[in-house]
Length: 117
Image (tube, rainbow, N blue to C red; front, side, top):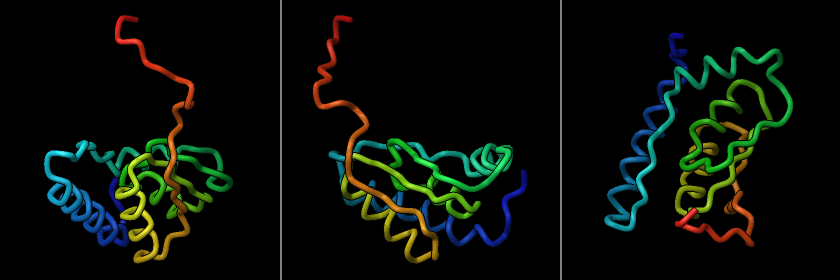
């Protein structure tokens, strides 16, 4: 799938923000790998209808939720890192996308990972 030309500014801004966050956070940065926008758009366009709710768990800088909003979904992202949520919100605002982002975790509070399991 060829990416629409009108998405170039958004994708460039996402890549720039991703690099900037990594540089600001230094060694505390938990590196995230950005999703492939072509694959994301291909998957979203394969859905039978492009409306309704879309939720991205662990949204990071928000690329997938932003693309879902661009496709017409009511898109939401949840991310544990407040710095990434701020970046995602800023990207949505600057690019006129209605995606919403919240700080939170999809891991239940009672969950205690046992490294021996």
